[in-house]
Each structure stands twice: as C-alpha cells, then as structure tokens.
Image (tube, rainbow, N blue to C red; front, side, top):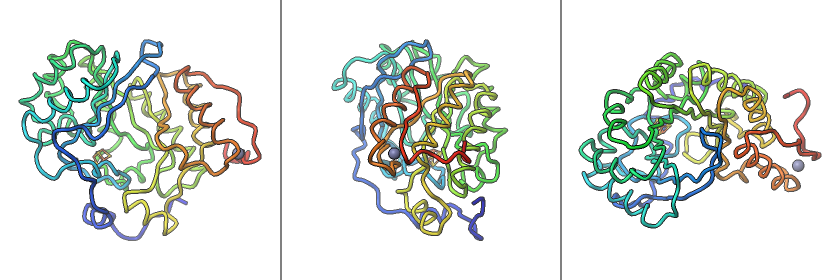
Length: 320
Ligand code: SF4
Ligand SMILES: [Zn+2]
C-alpha cells in the first residue's frame, strides 16, 4: 500500500467525517473496570481502570475515536475527584490504577490543576498511577502531580507508529524526536512511561503493518519506555471508515497481532501487552478465534510465547 490520498487530512476533514458523540455525564466516569495485568514487578496484579469523562482532547488524530465519550466544555472543578470517588466506591480493590481520560491528563481544560491535590489523595491506596498524555502536554505539571502521589506515576504516550510519513499523516502533531525527548524527560524525573503503538495504521499493507509495528516496538524500547501496548487499528470514527472504503486501510489480522507480540516478547526489552478490547472484530476465522484470544491473553499475563495455533487460516509464510 503506502499510498496516501492526494489531499490534506487535516482537522477540518477529520471532524467532517465524525458522527455524534455519546451522551455522557461530567460527574460520572463513562466506564470502569478491574482486570489482571502483568505488573512491572513481574507479578500478575489487579489494575483498576477509570475512564474519566472530561473535555475533548485538543488534538485530532486521524485514527482516534476517543472523542466519542467526551464533553465540549471545560471540565468543572470538582468533577474529576467526584468521578474517581464514585468509581472507587463501586470497584473491587486493586493495587494499581489507570486514569484514562480520552486525551491528556495534563490538559488543564480536561483535568483542572486545582483538583490535583484531591485526586492524589483519592489515589493514596495505589502503588502505581497510570495516566495518558501527548508529549506536547508533558511538562512541569507532571512533576507537581508526581510529588503529590504516594505511589509511582507512569505516563502512557501514544507513539502510534515509527513510520515517519504515516505518523505525520496521522495528524498527531508529534514527531519521533519529540516522543524520544518526552520519554527521556520523564525517565530523568523518575516517571516510567508506556507507549501505545498501532498495528497496521492506515496506508500500510498487512506485511508493512507487521514490519512497522516491530520497528515501532524497537523505537519505543530504544527510547526508554518500560512497557509497550500493541493496539490493532480499527474503524469506527468516520475518517477511518472512509479510508477503508477507499482502500487506504484494512484492519490487521489476529495472526499478525500474535506475530508482533511474539517479536516484542523476544526482544525482552520490557513488558509488552496486546490490546484485546473488541478483539472479535479482527477475527476472520470462526474456528480459531477463541484459541488465538487465549494465546494473546497468555502472552499478556505470562510474557511468554505459547505454541502457535494450527488452523487453515494461518498467515502466509511471506508475512513472517
Ligand atoms: S492525542 Fe490521543 S486522545 Fe487526542 S486525538 Fe490523538 S489519539 Fe486521540
Ligand atoms: Zn482459523
């Protein structure tokens, strides 16, 4: 593939392809859950995830659908602590917590800085607090928040792809150097980082998608991240659906996800986790879906490579 539409897929174009947002309440998280994850310590531990409702991210990445559960207005002070308290009252206990806010934790319009103290107090029981943020919003505020926490702060950053041209087309407004500098800034200040990486972003064939997902893991670990999450790219935000209809995008296969995970685990450079959300949408074979899902779950939890799945649909040798 590696061909691009002959026009600019800018903010305006991306916005014009959107459908409407979901109804959300600025005083309630839009989702929450507790699940097991392989921790940095090597143990399998419970991690709570609270999906905060707040003002939409100011960036307009081509593949992003996180805007669906956001508000248009600046988040009112007090709303975020209220959401966290609400979720913690309902969720079973966990050792670590992710506060994912469909954007950037250090975007002051999404998470008011005057709430940091109260948020940090609510997070007292947790050993690790993981938030997400674009490198352009990683600054002194992260250090202020780090100092308020009893536990360790970890920041998840969307690297997406190490393919420089595709990264530019994703409208992320970040280059590889900025990612690297951000990870180094965090490391120098005792803050661990994880990278969100895409498997087969638009404009790449399946084979190129696998190749670049591996290079992206190489780049992320070389930059100093401790954990990489591999996310199979999907449609659903309007822009991606258009790209698929025009032949600029096809979702990756589960077998490709397994290959990239295998590669990442063999690197032995840090934790590597596959995003298994909605995994069935990537399945093209009813015979092996459950087996592949279980294999990926085992890779996530044990950081080991279980035997390959034998099925007629298995990936052609050429892609390996
Ligand atoms: S920075 Fe993150 S949340 Fe914001 S548009 Fe890009 S992918 Fe979505
Ligand atoms: Zn199969």
